[in-house]
Length: 59
Image 1 (spheres, rainbow, N blue to C red):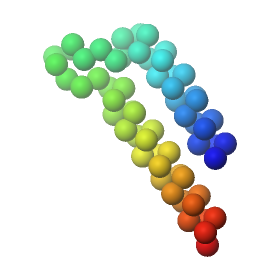
Image 2 (image 1 turned 60 degrees about the vertical axis):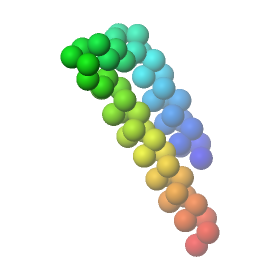
Image 3 (image 1 turned 120 degrees about the vertical axis):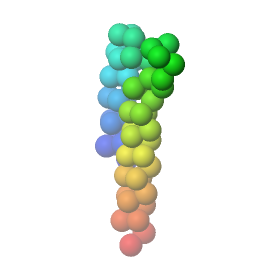
Image 4 (image 1 turned 180 degrees about the horizontal axis):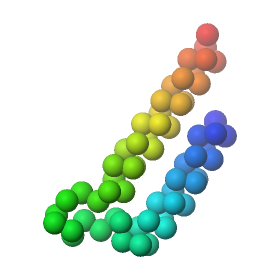
């Protein structure tokens, strides 16, 4: 659990810096910002780590 929480804290700190530099802006050719794909990767990573931790705990 601490690993996932530490990862999320670091990820959102890096995301805050990236948004401050303009990577969250979607006005560039009306495309999705590159930060949103990183958000999805962070969600998938967090959920999969928690799922495998639950499987490991149950077995």
